[in-house]
Image (cartoon, one colour):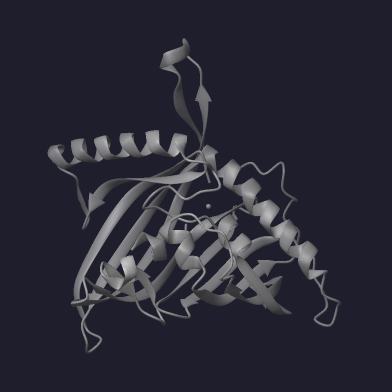
Length: 284
């Protein structure tokens, strides 16, 4: 399910242009599109690096939906999210509003420790096995078309329609699935940052030829990024609906949502080598 939900999922941005309230006339010429997309990709990659100085809380909700569209079950998970080598790591701290008990907390610590070790060895341009694909990689895999300008959250935004490139070289299930996507992308014109994305599958995506799972055409999600305190672009959440069939038999329909908040910046404070630790500096 993270293949869909985390397409999700990015402070001190010295490398990025400062936020600008610049206004553009609706009929002003659009910037050169190839150059604009190169700038957006570069800024997103810079953001991927800078975000490793931050942690945040994510609240995830999954609703099981029956054939009549009724919610039959709701599950929630509260997580502490951080980044290692540009890969997001989630540590679950609550399930359905309740803190983990000692046994589950120990199991979660062991899981996260192994995941961190794997993230340190996985190249930044490849998704962590079973985990997310970065927005940077989505931008590299897509073909954009039909550019136009429109206001979004009170700021000038350039909008594109896009489709996944069928000939793109990909690594892992998450990137393979991205070639089946189509959607619309909102780019903040002043900061050259992805502000909003709406995506759907334009074809079924079969895992192991459909023997394991078949994510059905029309499954969709949206993703948001925004400025935090007017200085840093970070993910703020998203939602979507997935329909799939497992093992050729069981049909599943779920609605998922995620809200990201409580961003904190930290730095590494060296204390006699091996005792170095992360120290919280500031809450955004």
